[in-house]
Image (tube, rainbow, N blue to C red; front, side, top):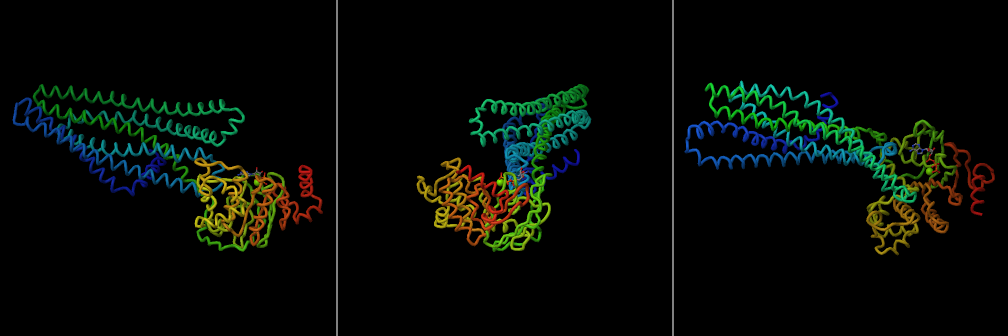
Length: 579
Ligand SMILES: Nc1ncnc2c1ncn2[C@@H]1O[C@H](COP(=O)(O)OP(=O)(O)OP(=O)(O)O)[C@@H](O)[C@H]1O
Ligand SMILES: [Mg+2]
């Protein structure tokens, strides 16, 4: 076992530690199971020698009670052992899954951009499942079979150490092939889990992109893609089946040498009258009873190897450092008066610089519009203000506090974001609107909805504000969804409002109305608004025209038009389109 594996074991053990009470109880019960087997082997001797050979008939009436009594004792012990250890294992797994979820939530946007939701889901569901199946099996078997093996071994050595030794030569011989098989199984099960991740990925893409698949008539191609990934998984898993299936016969063959040797030697000694028939049968019973736990333990090694593969993948996620964390001495940012200050901010997602020396200072209550060609870096500015990423150079201040020195929670409490991705939860409209302010009452929600021009269409829905949306409820149009998101932001009542193409899905008429509502909202609030439609931004206090991550022009709508630069060109283009 290398040190990496040892680490994984230790970590797993640490997760089981809180359940040591149950584990201890289970251990105690496995002594009962093991003891019963040893007693059975022990009783074979008087059974053969006194009862069958010597004909001591007084024992006959005891036999049925003994058999049933032993079975009951072993059964109860087994029940207590298995039930408790499974619960302990499952609880540890439960903790791991919860921990994984909490940890993923803390990870930064970069992590989510780089890892598909399919592969993350596969780790939290499939990999943890493999661990779960394995861990509970392993704990059950290892505990019970190992104690049984030890008890029987002790008895065998006590009864006749020479014969016991002969039987035991086999065990070290079996260890080599067993561990080789285990390694193979681990390798292929690791790959199998990776392949299962690909299967989940295809599924996730299919269900989120079903419209595109159908519109382009690509059902067949997607079908083949799925089969290919599913087959990939099948191939790996078949390999693990092969090595797993081989392990029992290999062990059995090896053990047959031991049994053969003991039989030959033991029979010779009985003939020479060195031991009684009962003694021979008793030790044979012990040895035969021993091989079952031995076989199970070796198979368990295979399961452990699978679990280790899965655990490694699980711990990979848990070990992912959260890129953006609160500073240890982070302050609570008080409710902002709305002064936002970008100071020489430069930023690159990877190597390519997306923002170069970006500086802007907003006065409290100012509306700043960001316009410019696609890919200019407008949304990036908003992401940086949200601290989804930290800039490589420069800093961002709110009311003079560097946003890296305040808690993320208090930072976000000061921001309300509406962007193009109108994400709504599978929940009622009411709860969706108050997502950013769960304590809001019905009236506040309705007011916000009215301001976002959402109230009217919500009232027309059969269940009004209680209407469920998403999987279990109605489907809304793009513009309706956008209005819900705007209501959500209005209700949040944060001092800094961030609108990234927030009204792009609305028609000109409702946009004008929503604009008016947002206009009311923007009063006393600092707003950053991004829009391609220049009619949306022309009333902003200040317009920043960005190109390739740099501010090219700034000024009011009128000033920029007079300047006759990039803004005017963009304006003319849109004017022609509309005109
Ligand atoms: N998560 C990301 N990882 C890597 N590069 C990114 C990421 N997001 C955006 N980019 C790149 O950064 C640049 C600026 O993107 P950004 O989204 O800020 O543009 P934008 O001005 O909002 O464009 P649009 O008007 O089309 O929304 C683009 O070149 C884009 O390819
Ligand atoms: Mg954008």
